[in-house]
Structures are given as structure tokens and as C-alpha cells.
Length: 197
Image (cartoon, rainbow, N blue to C red):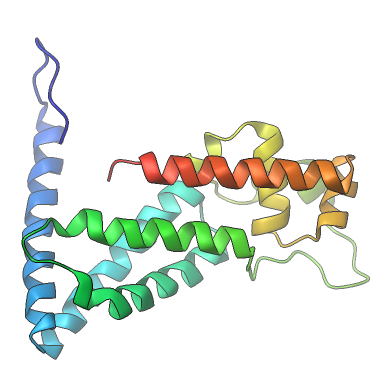
């Protein structure tokens, strides 16, 4: 938690958020510790709660894309596989969100999305060419990307266009598009890693 600058006071919203995080932290740490001892009911409860939290976290950062659903499932699976690594003497939230951020970057890197706009031989809707993210709800993380990087990322990794298709829609070479996608991915990774939960 960061220090409050001199002369500034915490408002009621900040206090409520800190209290909520503290309650979640204690509950989740307790449930995970219990799950590590083999308590299946506590483990189910923990995963159920975390699924909702992970979904909200990813949608607020990436937007309402189909890849978020896959990323939530990948995150829950990774939590299951890494549950033995959680140390009850350490905070739970950083452990949890390190896994979630890693899976979000992996999902974007793979570009796996059910949001594909067309099948072979079908025309892509004009609004997707002009501004693909205008059709879909974007998250705050994508809004932080420069327009050129956001457009390249949305077309290829979220909407599922091939490099050639996306380059043609934007009017640049495939090599230039690959550079934009690479830069966008690096920026997204940095934003996720610096994100304070």
C-alpha cells in the first residue's frame, strides 16, 4: 500500500476499498490454507469467488471480449496447479494476480479468440475495418495504448484476423503490423505488471 501524501486524507471510498481488500485477503488466504489441507468445500468456495474477481479484473482492463472467458478458465487452472506454492505467511492477492496477469499476457500472445468476425470467403463488416474496438466494449488497459498499437492488437489478437488481413485493413505492410503488435504486447505486459490491484 502506498503512503498518503502530506495534507491528503483518505476519503470514505478509499477506506471502504482498503477494508474490502483486507477482508478479501484474509478470507482468501484462509480458504487457500484450508484447501491446501484438503478441505474440498473451502477450495470450491475459493475458486468460485476467484472466478468472479478474475473476470471483473480482466474485463475492466481488456474489455468484454471472448478471450476473457478463456483467460479466467486458464487462470483458475493455473491457480489449481500452483496452489501448493502459496505460502500462507505471504499476502494472497499478489500471488493471485501474478498468475492472472501472466495468463492474460499468454492469452493475448496466442491471439485465441472466439470473436472471429468472418469465415473464409465472407466480408468483414465495414465498422470493424474503420474502428474494430468501437463495436466492442474496451477496457481501461486498451485505452492506454496509442491508437495505432491498439488497432493492430485488437484486429489480430482479439478479433482474430490474420497478419495479412489486418495489415490490408490498416493499409500497412505485414512487417509493420508485426512490429505494432509486438510493441502493443510489450506495452500491455508492462501495464499489467505495473497495475496495482
